[in-house]
Length: 221
Image (tube, rainbow, N blue to C red; front, side, top):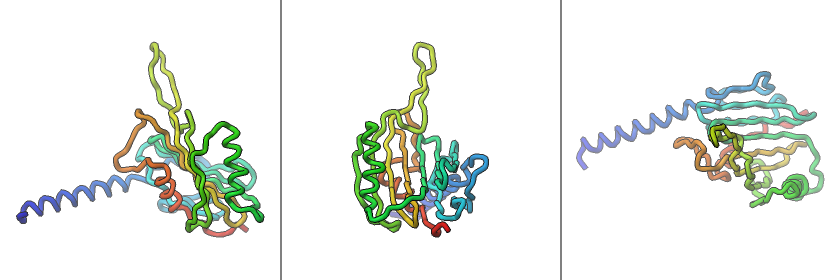
């Protein structure tokens, strides 16, 4: 291979890397629209919970339609939700509780898996993992019409909105008196918007990357 051809290839590769890096720079906190009255705070591209019990590196989100909200649905419980226009939702739930002498697997089976099954959800995967967060139970299951977005079609001259199906993945673990749930909800279907530079699937891979950005800061006092 001659020198000119090698230089052209090198220049093209460098341009591609710069293009991808420029696209990635548009992701994350700069593209987010926080909800009014957000309780936590953002430091660069990291969300810090109101009581500084955990922090989360914001996962790659589309540069349009990215939203974030945190709320306290019940006493001591924090719910953080991130979404974008790729029909995806990332959820972090922090809720106080006592594990006692039970394993996290037994707790999840009783408090999450059984209620899901009772509601008609078929859990396709439930297994224990050893992670840097400690023992984690991961779940996966499909949900009919459970996507975090809607699709609009025209039937007989009228607009009809429907929710696509979804694939859902969970990480559940216990730490310092609180149960944590990291959840990834992915809308599926041929008409859903895709992105060449943001990974949407498989669910277990994106969920693992999401969890990799989560960190316990300290035990709540």
